[in-house]
Image (cartoon, rainbow, N blue to C red):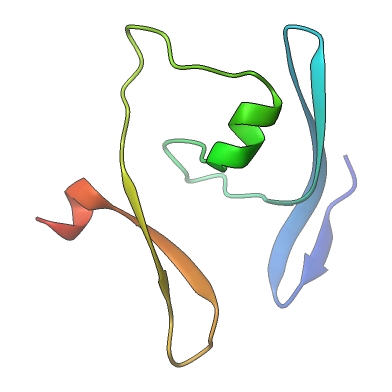
Length: 81
């Protein structure tokens, strides 16, 4: 796996495969401390990926950091605690 650094962040390319559907993601953040993985709803639709009855669904709020102008996503359950 080739890791490249952009803006101080480790990024890789990844291919997601689900039921013979393939999706290339060119900028995947490597986060070894992450407890979960997040992909966009658009990518999930492109893969025909749907939640199973036992999956936990978390809503996200997308915001923009006014200091850096970079988008950020925050789980709603975290925002309310």
